Image 1 (cartoon, rainbow, N blue to C red):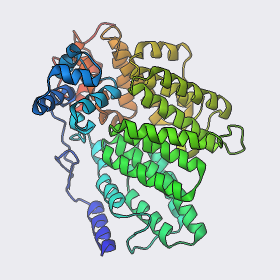
Image 2: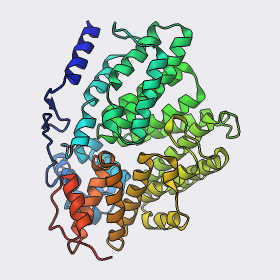
Image 3: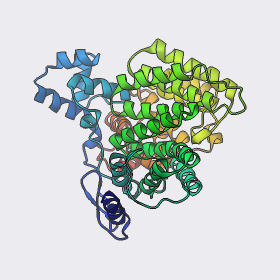
Image 4: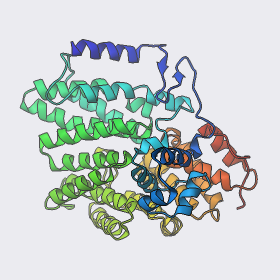
Length: 451
């Protein structure tokens, strides 16, 4: 019965010309795309104020729990300050006793066709991850594992290039068929299916996270981690723990991510040889340190953040540039991560200056995701200068959005940074107006900044 239901749902999702429901609540399909609410980008603070009042909490209490001043919280609630740190959103959500999504409003109404196309596959992926397990699968035929592996590799490449409409297409079916092989295949087939499933879940995680569906990203992270644990491969355990931890962090469960990262780093410590013929376990170990550094930075543990970043750099200097599972571990990507970690430590302008003193040749990675992420992190780092470097921030945010619009426009921090840049602008500038239009956000006068 479940197999019939799955096939019926897959047919509905893929039926040509079918009008589907947008993940933000608006109707999409037949060429119709809805834009976001005009005030949405600056609404994180307004949502915080509403929740605080509904909880009956004072500014003093919430500010104390979030580790910020009463004046800063008031400015956030009134839209006079923006959210350029994910850790700040997480701290405020914890202080208010709500989820991160309650503050960010994700998933958003979709402002462009590319975001709409990327969102189409997510309900199917979420349903498969919820309904199909590593022990209980529907009665459906499964293609050979080698063919599924080729398709997953192609989907992962699409994800790395931020083509999420293609990375998510038929991914729910691939996930199902791989899990069928895990349950019904012989030992060799089962092992191949588990390894491929770890990568498929990494694609599902990235697609869901970057299109603004953090709950589905968490489901994908858990399934991939469970598959890696069942297989017992150290590198795959490390890679899956890495993306599962990021999913947990985006969902606001920082403590659970910290526990997973600590345990995984301890497990891989004795097995990560960066000089081995296959250094993939060392790559995973280095990525775990990067994630631990970011998690520590969001929790205001600067010393821990710098320690883990330093460990990742030591490993990367020995492995060189690697790209197992298209995760681009190496010196270049460690440098990219250092910008985001610096921004989370509220040290953005200094992190930017350190990075640009020795230019990062991120284009050499061949990854649209990494190039766009670098420019976005540059933008939010510069925005922390509170107006002194807004012209540079606008240029980097504009470039990030032109490189990877779906990745950037569905990011709550990007939306808040844009709203903050607009609020501070004094005169009209075309790049800022264009960003507001592309995000589907109404500006506050559409002014410009001095260079």
